[in-house]
Length: 251
Image 1: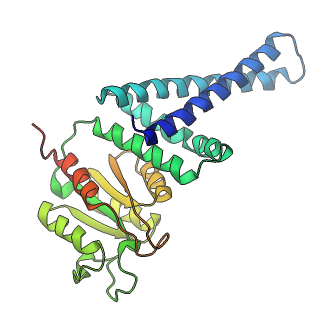
Image 2: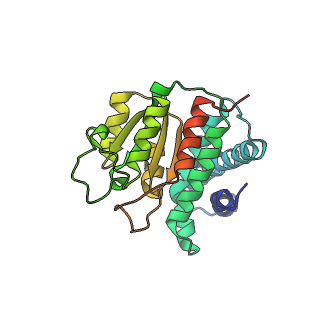
Image 3: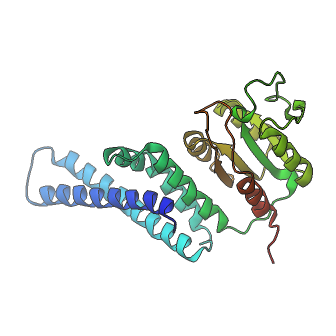
C-alpha cells in the first residue's frame, strides 16, 4: 500500500483502538455492579461493540483486498459501507492529530480507487460517464458548457479541449457539473454503469458516497490558482481510469 492509503487505514485503526477501549471501559463499569444509569451504559456498550465489530471486519477485508489486489466478491458492499460510514470519524481524528482533512479524504479516494480496481466488471463506452467540474473551464471563456460540453471551441486554453478529444476517441459520455446537485442530475439522466469523476477531495468523497451503487474512479484535480478557478487534472490518470472500465490492455 502506498503512503496515502496507509494514512486512511491507519486512522481507522486508531479509531478501532479508541472504540475498543471505550467498549472495554463501559462493560467493566456495567459488570462491576455500578448501578447508576445501568440501562444507558448497557445500550452504549452494545452500540460501541457493534461499531467495533463492523470496523474490525471492514479493516480486515479492506487490507486483504489491498494486499491481494483481488475482489472478495460480495464483501465489497460491506467494505464500501464501512469505509463510507467511518470516513467522518477518520477526518475528525486526522484534524485532532493535525493532519489536513483533504489529505485524509485523498487517502480515502486512493483506497476506494484500489477497491474498484479489484473488480472485474467491463463497461461499454456509452455507459461510462466522465464527470468534470465546471472550474476546469478557462475562467475567461465566454461559452457556456455546463449544459452542452460541445459548446467548447477547443481553443486549448483549458483541459476541456482534451476531455472532448477523449470523448471522441472512446465514445464515452462527458458531463460538466457546477455542483453536487447538477452532478446527481446528470447521473440520473444518463444512467451510467460507471463513472470517472474529476473534482477536489471534498467533492469526490461526497460524490462517491452519493452514488454508492455505482463504481466510481476518482481523479483529484490540481489547483494551481487556488480552488474553484482554472483547475486542471492529470490527463494520463483520466485515460487510465477510462481504460480500466473498458478493460483496454487486459489480457
